[in-house]
Length: 302
Ligand code: FDA
Image (cartoon, rainbow, N blue to C red; front, side):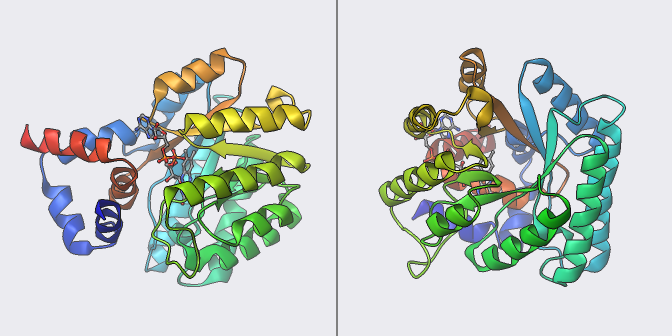
């Protein structure tokens, strides 16, 4: 109920204004967002990579409704990747891209062109791109764009959401690719996806089995200890070394667990969002966990 309300609020311009104007919001946002500028993002990336983690950097923004904003978002990624190059960080830092931020809802051809520019800049610094997955209505378009990108940039990855009925089949189709498996952060209707946590978790394990058995590179994106343990068992059963898959977690979520995994010899990548368009991202983090809402309310009450 609370989750549905928060996910609905993540798309409400009125709520955006109200939440953004609360003085305490910034403090809470800072827990999940690396800052507003490229320099802020790079400071956090240097700290995390210095501690043995790898990162995937997200320039915040989604559902842009004009071409100029889509062009600016594309430029932000290219600038970021160009800045990583002289620091030699390309190998440890990849980028995550929401196609809706670079124009998918306006013109799919334009978004593909923008995504190619980002892939080219990534390759030039030894980095890679992963496409985030947005709500269920965008999956076909995202996978078509992925296919077009992989013709020239086969290293391009994509997020797949276990909450969707279709995802096990999508994992089979993508078993030779870099796939980030997530539970799914958007509202999904019963016609398209599982409604209960138990069903989403069971589907996650089925998708994991497919990916671990495949020839691609599974990216196990979850903070759920049970699923982390299952992923390790499945990787072992399929003879995967620790560097043949990785765990991923969000910036600001379970940093101790991230370190523990690194110390155990696992590969861990942290998803680092930066930029000023943090509202949708922030509301999805609140929706994921009642404790995050409590943390927010405590900050608001001062
Ligand atoms: P879940 O929310 O069920 O949490 C499982 C358990 O993890 C909890 O019970 C608790 O034990 C622990 N936990 C979770 N949060 C915690 C916290 N703050 N502190 C302590 N313990 C905590 N979604 C999407 O739709 N498209 C995408 O492209 C992406 N991309 C993405 C990248 C990365 C790197 C991650 C980690 C996640 C995404 N997601 C995403 C979000 C994803 O779909 C999902 O909403 C969140 O990861 C939360 O789900 P969990 O798997 O962590 O499980």
